[in-house]
Every structure is written in C-alpha cells, then in structure tokens.
Amino acid sequence: MNIVLTGGTSGLGYRAAEVLGKEIKNKIILIGSNKQKGETSVRNLIKETSNNNISFIQCDLSSISEIKSLADKLRKFKIDILINNAGALFFSRKESVDKIEKTFALNHLSYFILTNILLKYKVIKTGGRIVNVASGAHRGVKLDFTNLEMKTNYNGWIAYKKSKLCNILFTKKLSELIKKNKMTVNCLHPGFVKTQFGKNNSGLASLAIKFLMNFFAISVEEGAETIVFLATDKNIKNITGKYFYQSKIKEPSIFAQSQKDADLLWDISLRIVKNKGLTLT
Ligand SMILES: NC(=O)c1ccc[n+]([C@@H]2O[C@H](COP(=O)([O-])OP(=O)(O)OC[C@H]3O[C@@H](n4cnc5c(N)ncnc54)[C@H](OP(=O)(O)O)[C@@H]3O)[C@@H](O)[C@H]2O)c1
Image 1 (cartoon, rainbow, N blue to C red):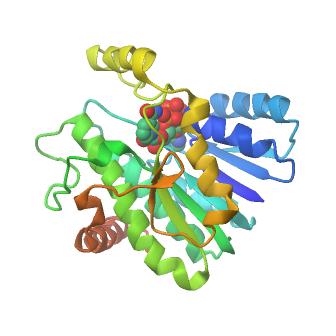
Image 2: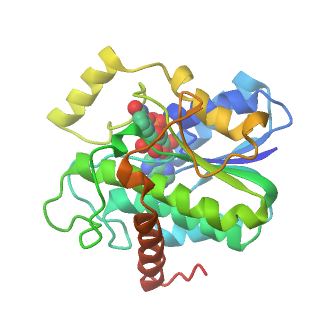
Image 3: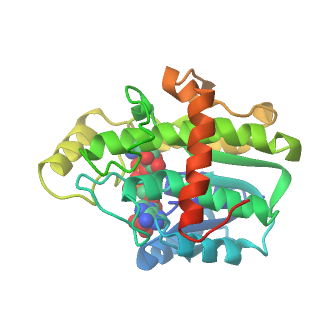
C-alpha cells in the first residue's frame, strides 16, 4: 500500500511509520519541515524495518504554497492511505508565511488543504483511507467563527484545543463528501503520549509539558496503535466520519458533533485559502 504520513519524522508519526513499514509491501512517504530530521528518520526506519520503500519529502505544512508543491510532487503516486498527523502547539501567537495564525494554519488548514488538493488530483484510490490525528484536547472549547485565528485574546493552549476540534469537524464534513468516492475518513485521540510535542516552545510552559510527560504520558508505541488501526484494520473499512480512542469509536464533545459548525468551518476554510490565492473547488 502507498502511504503518505505527515509529521512522520518524530513521535506518533515516526512510530506509525515503523509499524506500517514492517509490512514490506508498504511504500511510505514521510512529510516534515526539517530536512535533516527527515533524512535521519528515513535512514533509521529503513534500518529498523528492512523496507527500502520509505522516503521523505520536505514541506513546511503551515505554508499554502509549500503544501501545493508537495501535492504536485505526490501527483504521480496512487495513495491508499493518507495520514494527517503533523501538528504543534505555539504558546505565543505566531503567523505563517501566509499571515495566518500558525496553530490554525498547521493543525487544521494543512489537513484541509493537502487532503483537498489530493482529492482534486484524484490521487487517493477508490477504497482509500484518510486518518486525521485529532486529540481529546478538543473537549471544553467551541469555535468562535468571528475570531478563528485568535487575533485578540490569544492563548496557545486554547488555540491548540480549537485546532483539534477543527480536525474532528473536518473529518465529519469530509466523510459526507467522499462517500461517493468509496473512501473513508476517521480521526482519533492517541492519548497523552511522550513525544517531542510542545518542545518547540521555551520557558515554563514547555518545562511543564516535559514534566507532565515524564510522569503521566503513555509510550509512543501505545499512542500510535489507533493510528495504525484506523489505517489498516479490515473490520473498519466501511466506517467513516468517526472519532476513535484506543481503537474504539468514542463520542466527541457536543461541539464536535455540530453539523452547522462542520459546514461553516468547511466554507470558511475554503474562503480563507481562496483569499490567499488557492482555489480548491
Ligand atoms: N503527544 C500527545 O500527547 C498528543 C496527544 C493528542 C494528540 N496529539 C497529536 O499528535 C500529532 C503528532 O504529535 P506528536 O505528539 O507526535 O508530536 P512531535 O513528536 O512533536 O511530532 C510532530 C511532527 O510534526 C511535524 N511538523 C511540525 N510542524 C511542522 C510543519 N510546519 N510542517 C511539517 N511538519 C511539521 C514534525 O516534523 P518537523 O519537526 O520536521 O517539522 C514531526 O514529525 C499532532 O497532531 C498532535 O496534535 C499528540
């Protein structure tokens, strides 16, 4: 199977690549922003799995033009499984090269844009699967469509929680739209997992994450299980639009079940991207 895995160069993505790579027939393309990290990951994964069909494409997924050129490079492939996993937490407000708040750009818009361009290019096979790595952190927040990019009152943790709510609403809406193509899309919470997550920040908050991870987080092996399950398990090949935790369907928050918000987020995301020069429909 041909697998594209964003954020496959560390943490959950790396572990998922390791498990999927052990199936020698799988071809895996890892996406990450750091070239050196990507190349090292590929070398290590090939050594660990004896699968030579693992490669890396560099892309800053917070940049619309870089996602567009990534999709152009992927155009020659036929993809069985797309795993949208790359994500980060930014304690202080930053903007992407497109002048979009970075948590929203990377954690939500990268899933939205990459998936939509690949669908437009028809490179995801019939029967293909899309897996979106969301988070249990989506609970306790609601989207504010008048301030999606938190131009005022920015709080990094809240921005992160909202971006993960976007992942679930995106999954819900996308599942309706791709049913006719016989594709599925599901999302998941991996648990609180010991990874590199949060380490791009400095200061007390970053130390706090490190501390909490050391004491409370589960292993990356355990955390990645639901990603691999959603990507490969034969029993769920007809299940779509669901949120999973520990390889079981779980009800997300009430706000993540809102059809109105799923529709609105879709339309606004299309509009934001169009205003930046990329037409997806
Ligand atoms: N760890 C947890 O407890 C936890 C819990 C719930 C959900 N999650 C979700 O799990 C996913 C993976 O996180 P993780 O914990 O495995 O974190 P991680 O170890 O920090 O890995 C993040 C991955 O994303 C890539 N990435 C980050 N920014 C990028 C960018 N601008 N462009 C392209 N790639 C980028 C990183 O590669 P580069 O450094 O090369 O860019 C890396 O491969 C995220 O979506 C996160 O929200 C994690």
